[in-house]
Length: 343
Image 1 (cartoon, rainbow, N blue to C red):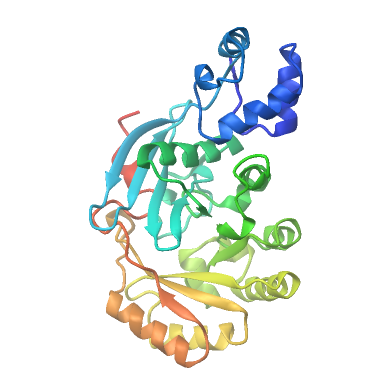
Image 2: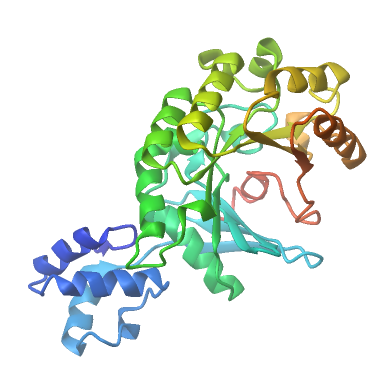
């Protein structure tokens, strides 16, 4: 079987070059080509014909198939359905902003967290993605759009901190000075609230932005829609968040998906005021994209704006997420769920 070079570090590629009987510096050259999104060894023009043939026989670069692309013609948002080598499927979302282009990356096939409003949770968990499979989402999206991606958000399918080791390699590869040298400050990782990993993340990646999927602030209510709350109750999570901000000096984003009749009442707003006051944070309010199978519907944008205003008046920075991709299957997992039979 050919060795997939995507996701290997420079040192690992140097070792691979040595296995082929080549000088270690060839591994560094390989890394630079791969980081540019080049998958065909014939395009690696600073290698001899003999070396390119040797690489062709022994290795490959990536294995993702682009199965579906949905494009919102109003704002340019594109949702990709990718096929993996083992027949599984994942999603990524490309978004254009004034400050640059962002890609929402998946970290797992499926998810263990079981959030009741999430389309990804409908089919449970299959496996973790490798660093290469996370990276290839970036390269494939750049090829398909013809645009450079300069912001990464790990908020797609899966719980990133449930795949911590591979996530770490992925972030370091993006940041590698010999490669694209993407600033850690241009990366964001979202978690449903795995406290031990939050503590570790503060040590390992203090410059990477952290987002916490909050969605409710009373224990019983949060556990009802987010089972992870049974293991890591919301008050413990908020204490960990405070410790994170004190250790890193970085602001946390609290993602709060607004579900009609579930977490958008006056009582819910009062809990946000009470429990988030004084925290170095920003609340990102997100009207839920309706997923028929979950039985949940989103609050109106007007309701979201009202809640944002109330929080701002209380001194808690809050915004309503810009509506992107309204004409496509925007909710995480929706596109995969609609195309189960194609791969």
